[in-house]
Length: 416
Image 1 (cartoon, rainbow, N blue to C red):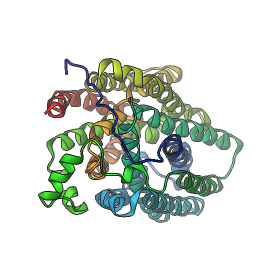
Image 2 (cartoon, rainbow, N blue to C red; image 1 turned 45 degrees about the horizontal axis):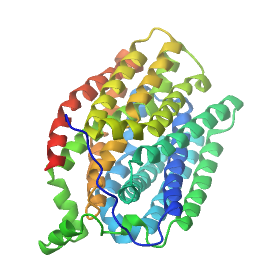
Image 3 (cartoon, one colour; image 1 turned 30 degrees about the horizontal axis):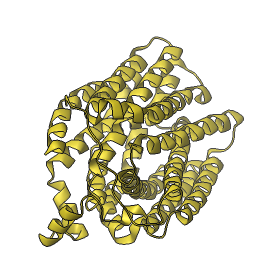
Image 4 (cartoon, rainbow, N blue to C red; image 1 turned 180 degrees about the vertical axis):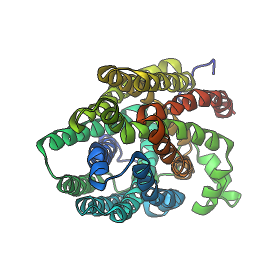
């Protein structure tokens, strides 16, 4: 960890790839941020409309998240079999269907209906995340510099726009069902436009380049099938360690989206439109950090940057959870966002260096998070019933500090 990471020279990919494909990837991330964050922006209304306690909201969310676990188990195989374009269309369509069902169910005050919608929604978003990761990793490999943080910045930009719009629509009294359904349909249409912009053979489908020799060796050993590579990825020590780090990072980021606004409503009695400032500020901080983060990564290297992002995230959680005022808690979410910005992009870069197994590795890392998400959201919700929402987030700070101990093994394995 004492030496800086050095990017390998950019690989030579198939012809016909350039700004159009990079623009399509930016579009995929922005739309994903917009699509998923509309639901987040209206969570206090969802909670109130369905008459749920924090533990009930957590349980409903985790039951709906079972679709993501199933999706992640097969997302690597589907991405390999279908290719980037068709897998992206399948993912966005499934996600859109789920969000429309959930929007109707909230209007009808049906908890089972919301769970059904979230099952489809989470299955779609799990595949969407894998396809995004594979394509973004491929585009970065064929680039001359670190650009993954900027792809993730576009996701944060989408979040920022959706959260701000959600707060405005909540303030104006726009019905939650209409908001979520229209958001889903518009997002699907934009995904289709980006798929048409993407080349007929996206770089995410290209298995050649810098790792051709390794890919040929895998094919010779009988591990070239999609299922064989998926099983092999689960036995890779580097992938499993990266998955553990990603669990902490994604749990932290997800906690902001799910609980930060509700925590401010409960602690300070502010309306939903004001409480929505917490995830909005978080998203804005992430945008700035991710746009500037490429310079930090190139200066400090992946490993030092990863340690820094984990520790600053933990500090932000502490400030948010322990501050005695609404304004200081918002400052905490800003610090939290600055810290959280680079962690997932760094993990994504490390996991997708080998194009032959990029989809399978991305699937393992995401599956690990969604598997643990069966535990983390209910744990926060049940703890919040006794301590309040903000104190219930404190264990995440200690988790982020603990996983910094996994960074030295990652550094060692990536040098081997």
